[in-house]
Figure 1: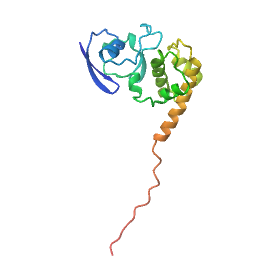
Figure 2: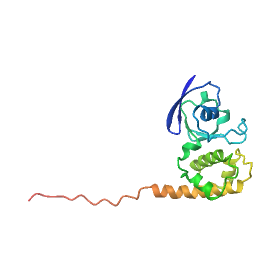
Figure 3: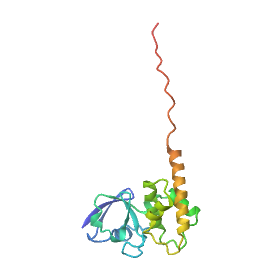
Figure 4: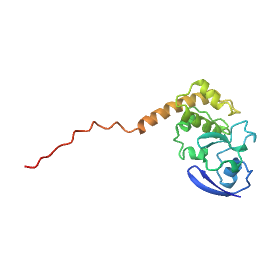
Amino acid sequence: MPYTLTVNGRAATVDVPADMPLLWVLRDALDLKGTKFGCGMAQCGACTVHLDGEPTRACVTPVSMVGTKKITTIEGLSTDATHPVQQAWLAHDVPQCGYCQAGQIMSAAALLVKKPNPTDADIDTAMAGNICRCGTYVRIRAAIHDAATRGRTSRAAADPKPAATPKPPVTVTPR
């Protein structure tokens, strides 16, 4: 059955079974390999994508349940690794084997949208469903705090400067 999906800001039509997990639609039908298969039971978080901004486990989400929700994968977070979470991940040397990193980054990015200045407890709660086989949890937490700072800095730089106080209109009277 054909489904039209919005993936990373682009429309894509796929002809796949209704019960096909979104993970396999992304990887096999759309050739987006950044989303990883880990456990197939929504326990490890390697397959995390965003559906309308919410972190979602793609391995257990049938394509028929996506509907009109916008899908964002790791490839859509940033095309050139300039997203604050990606920059912080690199700065803190978070990746070891790298397998879980796409899911970790997607969960962290969703957290920072909801809580731009998260506490350690906020981070622990948001990241609890993401397993890192290499055990880089301390660096993950530090990178999320760093990404929050980077995000505040980039938002401040993007905000336009306040407009100057308008001058009163000039009245010209004919002579």
